[in-house]
Amino acid sequence: MDEIRAVLEDKVYDFFDGGKPYNLNLIGVRNDIQKPERFDDAILAVFRDDAERWQVEQFQATTDPGLYWLRNPIRDAGTAILCPGQYAGCYRIGQHRDYEALEQIHNMRYVRDDDQDDRLDLGLMHKEGQPFTDVIATNLHRADDTERSEYNYKWSAGCQVIADPEEFEHLLSICHASADIFGNRFTYTLLTIEDFQ
Image 1 (cartoon, one colour):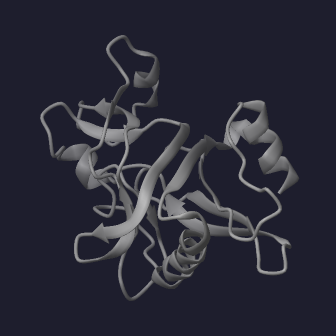
Image 2 (cartoon, rainbow, N blue to C red; image 1 turned 180 degrees about the horizontal axis):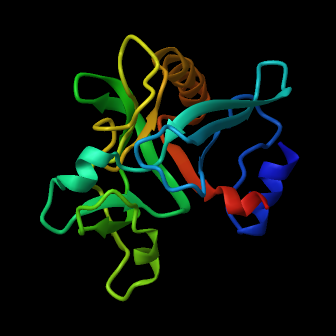
């Protein structure tokens, strides 16, 4: 927890505490190995529990669009890839398709990968004309509804996706506990593994 807090503070990002339970820090960590077909990233929930003890819950996830959507973009401009950063109040407990998930409600920053190959073009984050900000329904949701998913083929078109449905339900329970105290808005911070090195 101290390392996570130090990374956020070094970037001058908010770290939620105040000595109160369920003041939730929702954090994605993108792996440096660019394999968009794998759930090789992590989503963390960092918070104090009812006894005010720190908890760091880690969920296997992807922060990248899957191969299908890289090869077959929804928009001609290309497939959205979320840029690292902190996005204040960007999610609420809402809907993704027909089930409860964290729904995007505020601008986030993206690049669009338009070459339809199997590689994430993260270098676009430094290209003139990129990135852009928008609300484009890049929610935080689960993959399959019955079992842990091994491959991110079509699960993410730019969303943040947790591989295991039970882990996702557990994260939602933490979000509900937080929303009951602090309201139904969640800040999401996307970091990279390099931030910890």
